[in-house]
Image 1 (spheres, rainbow over the protein chains, first blue to last red):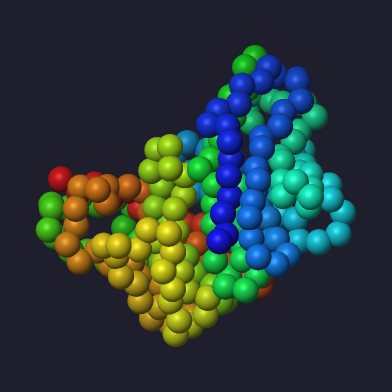
Image 2 (tube, chains in turn blue, cyan):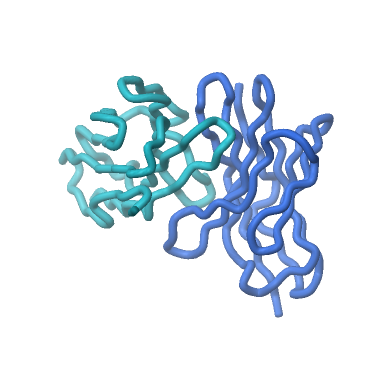
Length: 113
Length: 112
């Protein structure tokens, strides 16, 4: 069955330090993976996606994500965190056969000055 | 070009009342989705529609019905609202399988 796991409810990091938000997935067939961000009282905004090709994908606001097929992971990263990156981050997987789009439970990123 | 539009933005219902949440997209997307967001639970898929004329259950369909009226519109109906349905509801539209979905701004529903 299709599923997404985000093992950390919250990630705390100091401004200027690198950050990683973890995501693992399960899906039949080739995975279509996405990261979204949600700021308070807002809808979801797309950050980046992995469809095929290079395992390191780059997205908006300096974020990137590393796809690892053997570990079924798609971790979100940023080399230098900003206080303004503080938000709720969601990983998602789209099933290529059913078109179902499933999200993880979200990880709250807190960047401290 | 409004993207994905949800109405209403806020709603308070009494237990047992019914209502329909409306969603419309102007991006010519084949797929549309309804989610609910609850603290600590993330976004959970209620129903989705992979194309006009089809609908399928998601992770938490009980207590809800949907209608894909046409390619643009995908409505979510609560026939008899319960306090457990208090949540923020999001609609999304998705294009080809390798593209991202776009979300509406959400409907905050409170059932008292």
